[in-house]
Image 1 (cartoon, rainbow, N blue to C red):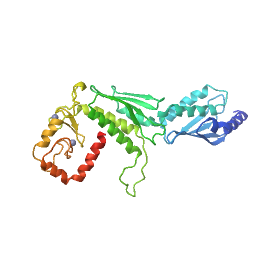
Image 2 (tube, rainbow, N blue to C red; image 1 turned 90 degrees about the vertical axis):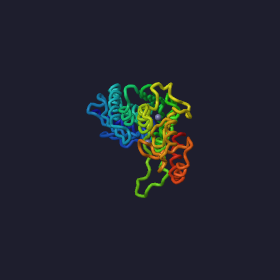
Image 3 (cartoon, rainbow, N blue to C red; image 1 turned 30 degrees about the horizontal axis):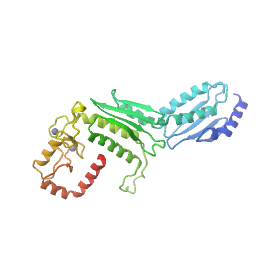
Image 4 (cartoon, rainbow, N blue to C red; image 1 turned 180 degrees about the vertical axis):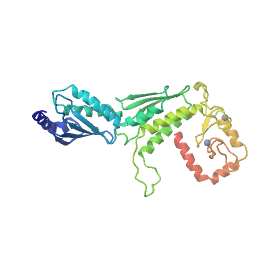
Length: 329
Ligand SMILES: [Zn+2]
Ligand SMILES: [Zn+2]
């Protein structure tokens, strides 16, 4: 090993590292180990440990990458690419070049901080679905299909993720408007819950609220919902709710064949539901035949008995209606 050469390089690293590698902090810089912390955001944070091989600089640097937030698989892949990069400059000083390369990689691949989430999402997708990573715009193009129905959106991952949550853009779908509102409203609610503490105060012994990544929760919800809804039946007549041809789906929300989704999440044809709500017995309030939860909806007139019942359950009802309103937003 050429000690003098390494000493010269270490001196150069001490002098230049924090200036030329934006966001870096030199922790140690000696013959046995160069240790540098590169922090772009809370999630884009990496520790680079560098050792010099015996025949340096004629062999590539020995690298170990550590991160509490980036996945091991990503770090393994990045280590390999760095080695390839170092091989391109054998015989020359490699430390600063490799550090700059790592910093650039993090900046140019903003989705690297969601690598684990993306791997989980991919397991839920089927052959007819699409997920394309767009590193340049820090977004994913998602298309989920079920039969002839599809939902497409650009899922944007903000710079300071997961401090801020993902958001959906350029949404395109052939589901009836009620379901589009449900997909968007519920996605927004999931995102919100990842970054905002619940309104209700937490019990004293519970750990404080911590923001969490929202990409996988949102996309997994969309995949499940898009695949499930076209296969669901009306809980009263047991016919499939949505027609096989999306063009034939009812878009007039007052038409008999319009599909309603009540608070418990089960689906009903509007006409089936109206008939059911108007048919005795009313005792105890009308319940969903599938899950037994009370059916709440203001859309149609109900009998006096139900109105009375609702009055008795006023508080519960107000809460539920508020939640219905939120997901319809
Ligand atoms: Zn029906
Ligand atoms: Zn139900």
